[in-house]
Amino acid sequence: MPFNVRLELDEAQDYELQSAVWRTDYQDPMTYLDLFVTDSLQNRMSYSNSEFDALIDLALNPTVRWNAMA
Image 1 (tube, rainbow, N blue to C red):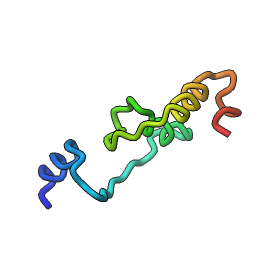
Image 2 (tube, one colour):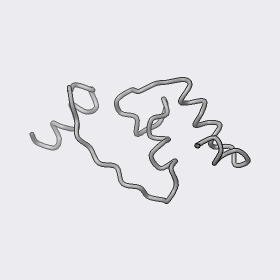
Image 3 (cartoon, rainbow, N blue to C red):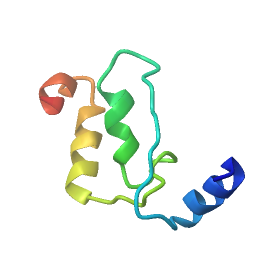
């Protein structure tokens, strides 16, 4: 499929299965974890879980960060 068609289908969320790659850009679990927050720009599949969002918000607090992620 031409790449521009793939992008259009991705934007419309018109697919059953999609293969994509995400590489880390810094050494921290948050480089993957924050992808799935409801309002993340990278959350292109409209995943939403309020409990997960709250846990990520907690993990952004530097005083409890590592314990919260564990």
